[in-house]
Structures are given as C-alpha cells and as structure tokens.
Length: 180
Length: 249
Image (cartoon, rainbow over all chains, first blue to last red; front, side, top):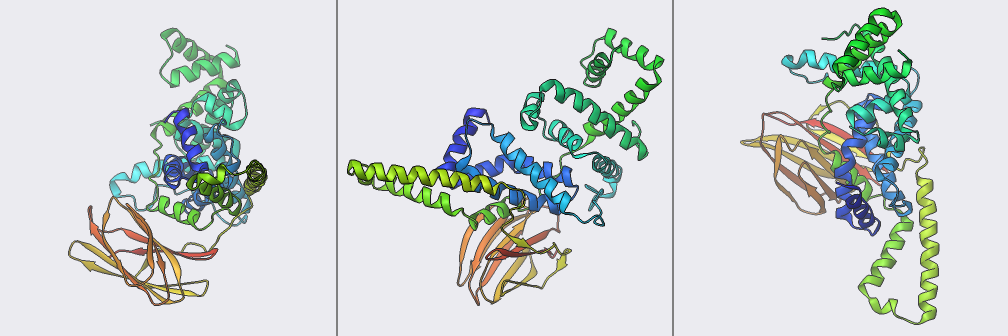
C-alpha cells in the first residue's frame, strides 16, 4: 500500500469506518507483533502489547495528523509499550530466549536452536540496537523510514546499524555461534 | 582504510554489492588489522544469523482479540464526535439550519475535536492500560471453568467425525467470550446458541455475547493435520481471563 492509500485509510478510520480500522489492523498487526516480540522476547507479552497498541491507536486516531507517516506513529506507540513492559518486569523474571523453539518438530530442531540463539543474543543488546535491527531485518524498512521512525539522520542510521550488527555478532559468538 | 570506508565496504560486501576491487581492499585491511578482523568476524556471524532469521507466525486469533478489545473500549470523546457527524450526514437539514445554529454547532464541534484530540494524545502515555488481564495459564484439557468479574463460563470440547465441537455455557452471569483458533487447522462449520448474540465472526475467531444461562456450540471442521488449540477470552467490563484449551483429535 502506498502512502496516499494509507492516508485515505486513516481518514476513513477517523470518520468511524469500522472496516477501515479492521484493514489497518490487518496491515499493521505483523509489524506491531514482530516488534513487540523481538523487543520483549516473550510471545504472551507481544500478544498483550499488540492489543494495547491498537487500542491506543484507536483512541488516538482522532488526534492523529494524516500528513504524518502512520508507520512512525504506530511504531512509537509499540516501542514505548514494549519498553514499558520490559521495565515493568521484576528483575527475577527471566526473559524467554527460547523463541521459535516450542513445538518445533525434530527435523527443524537445528533451525529452532539457531532462532533461539539469535533471540537470546538480541536480548543481550540494548533497546536502541534491538530497535534498529528489528526495523531493518525483520520489518524490512529503508534507512529513510528508520531515520524517520527514530528521529535520526539516514547516515546516523547506517552507522548505528553497523555497530548494532557488530554487537549482535559478538553476542552470538559468545554463545558459541559461528558462521555456518 | 578509514573507519567510514571500512563500514561502507563491509556493508557492500555483506549485501553482495561490492566490486572485486572493494573485496580485495577489505581482505587486505582485515588481514593487516587484528581489530578489523574481529569486527569483520562479528559482522559476518550477525549477517548470516539475520538472513536466516524468520518471521514468527502471528498467533491464532490475534486480530480477533485486537478488534474485540477495541469494540469494548470506544473512546467517549470521539464517539460523541462521530455520532454528531453521523447525524449531520443522515439528516442534512440540520446542517442547513439557521446561521446561528450552524455557527454554534461548528463551535461545539471544534471544541469537541480539540478536546478529543487532547484526550487521545493523553491516552498515548505508555502506562495507560484499560483492561485487567490475569496471567496466561498453560494449555489445559477441557472441561475448563473460567471465572471473571462475577461471571462463570464453562468450556468443554468433544471430538466429531471431521473436527471438534466446543460448547460454552454461561453458568453464572453474562460475559463477552472470544474464541480463537488457527484457521490453517480448522474452519468454522457452525455456531449455534439459544440466547445472547454473535457479535462478530471471521476466519479464525468469533465473539459471542453470553447472557446468564446461555449455551453456544461452535463446530470446527478440521482442514489440516489433527491437533490444535482454541483460545478462550472471557471479558466482563474491564476484566478478562484467558485460557488455551487443547482440542481433541
């Protein structure tokens, strides 16, 4: 969907069109869920956060300026909610580094193990690094879009991504992962 | 090689856009600089891991839960605003009334819109959570009794020749019940009940408004391999309770 279609969709939502809101949820549920999952490392938290984010979007839509990029707005809500959830955890609550490992069939065990290691390494990173990597590699956003969402220059995005990848690689190697 | 050049060429090599000369430059730099060698090793490990990383499938029924929670948490200000706008659309004569009336209405609407926007903006504070949800329980075998906000909902399951049946009974009080399942595994073949109403259904989920004593039966037809769960969310006011129940078969 291009930006003009999205603006039209947001305007329809603002006019109280329930179908348009369902379309907006359909369009962004994966973005919100994936972001929340990679930020918190917990499926149940990601599920709850997804609900809360769309509730806040719904309540805030009347005040949203459609000339702004919707992605940047919903992204900020989702990331704040994820960080809030992480900070609300008691120190004793372990993060779940076992993403993608439950119910995995035996044939996929190795792949699942790798996915767990990646998620574990992601959780070793700080929130800024995690955001950058999720935006670029899981949500497939351009440098310009990432810059807009995070409020930084495109050149800064590139250089921070470089460092975030480097730190992710180091965290993976600490966990015994090498190139395969 | 400067740090900026190293970043640019390393990125190009990893993304497969570097030319031969750049690749040779990088190899030479990495061979002569131990620090660059370490960084390059980190980057390659991260690159392989990120390329391999897959998107997690969305949980079954997520969209239904989102839409359900929104349905019962409409913002007062914007509803009021929407209703007034809707009444103008339905009865244009209102909009063509006296100049004074229109001016007054526009003034009120502008104030309402401003206040609505303000309220909406405030809602974006990350600590605002409207619903109290108890922690998720592990997957259970039916029958299951769910109690929340004075309501008691019993859920049982039974195998059928081509899938499973789920029976929901409001043993005490009324509640909104969302049933969500994986549409890749089951199609809804039927949803029958005595009293209460079906609020919404879509592929993978249904929302039923249960009144005291009402009983509903959900018939699921298996479309993929056996197994799967049904996720039940019972909501009363701002309280909700969830259970994931293993389906038979």
